Length: 165
Image 1 (cartoon, rainbow, N blue to C red):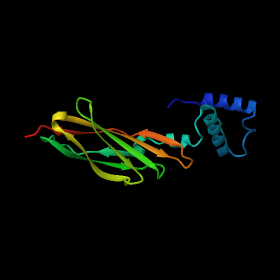
Image 2 (image 1 turned 90 degrees about the vertical axis):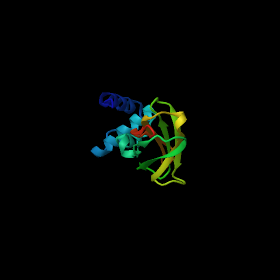
Image 3 (image 1 turned 60 degrees about the horizontal axis):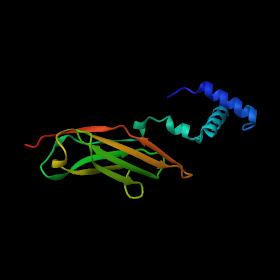
Image 4 (image 1 turned 60 degrees about the vertical axis):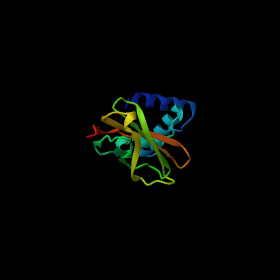
């Protein structure tokens, strides 16, 4: 992250000068709230986003898949996800890339019909890909109480599929 201490102080000074906020708060913890609110208002980000961005992306969830064999024909290959979104209104999109970095499968899950922890599968065919290291990417989108949308890419995960026997 880029430090914004000097920038935040300048923005607060400007906000005080133009009357966006009143004088100093009565408590120290209010100062942080007032600064984040002013900075957020001036940069177009709501004040509560600062609490969401302090979480590491691995805190929101993860994906995983076992190593295995790339079988002849079209088959299901298992994987799982485990989520800890900040709200109960979320969507998860998963994307599978093969060893040549081509996207070969995807999935979408919603809080309306899917659990936060789930075992599922990608379906793809051997003639579309080759053995090697596969990458799962996942995009978690959640909605705040006022309908504001937030997104985070989870840490990618990898698994290997070896040649068929």
